[in-house]
Length: 562
Image (cartoon, rainbow, N blue to C red; front, side):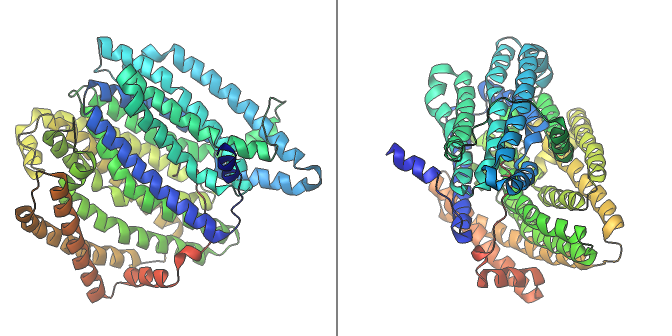
């Protein structure tokens, strides 16, 4: 049995169709497991001091991963490995193995050094992460964060070893790793938590990271790419560092924003960090599926077009990807707002997750949703700048508006707490007048407002640099999709009331039926509008399905993108 499993891990998937179906299938499994993970946390733990501690424990390890471990991203390393393998085929890839050893040595020294510093200073850092925590809860946060420091180290090595995995087309391993990461976390929730409390949840994260990296090891053994300590060629390291730096800084900015918002949430009310994270995780799903997917798919074509001087083609690629992102994302925004309670209740609503928790999380999800289109397009335009070799511009824009996200969150929270009229308006609009802890809603609102302004800043700059001569194409798409999305949401809202009288919405199946069927009728109404408007994006989607899109060549993002 063990032999059979390792033979599967070492299998080479050279066919495009095989790899495409494999990656698509396991990406779906990973998303489903992520939902089960959040549902298990909501059911067994619920929004509480324990879950707040668990989520706050991620802040420092995530920041370390995004600022240090992501420097060895697959996207950057693969070209180096391929170049060295091509130059040294007759010597069985000695140069590539030597390069792996150098990166391994430098990375291990760096990560151990950073982890040791973080471990020692964790009491000081933990107080900054969650200033609202005191006494036993703060002590638990310190220990939880220290356990989770294993995660960025192990995931960083997995990212490094994943370079070898992809070069030798072991897509099964690459696709399976995120699935096992979520399985480790779920094991921590179900098995370790009853024995060790919040520390059991942290052990689950460490286990998931260990499983993530362990899956890569059979491939390294098979191809004799087992890394070891060696002398470091600092010239190669400098090249890797300079190429990775813009992407690393971009990841770090978002981590910093989330870290500050979590620290603010810790001062509001017990459970606020938990509810914020539940809503944030839900709104991230369409961004990952739509924004990241289109941006990753467009990047090679954008880079090739710009490097070969095909500027017109470069512009077409950006505009086409933008149109498709708007086409898919805007309807999701409207459906998230209308069906927010059903979505949250079906995914999270069981056990320790009360109806009040559902309503507050749903309201936070609606406020996050208004920036889903902006978040997706920011990913695209940032990659467009990377393809053009202009990495400083998006970094400066993102830096300015990330600061605004934090400022908006702080100012809105103060205004909400000091002005009863504004508080009543927000609570009435989102139907949470009688729910405690509504001040939490100012955090996703501030985040969304800053993100929307970030998009406009990046868009105007990108338009000035590349799209001065193009007018109207995105405006037409936006207004047509907006009209269809609005009608879609209106119809879904009407059917919510109808099915609310048919189904027992106090049961899981009742609320699932109400939300699912209302969404289906709403989507059908939106399709009718697209057909009547003769929407170009809708025609392109239909044409893509007719061409059997699954037969096209796949483009593999890094695990951090997934």
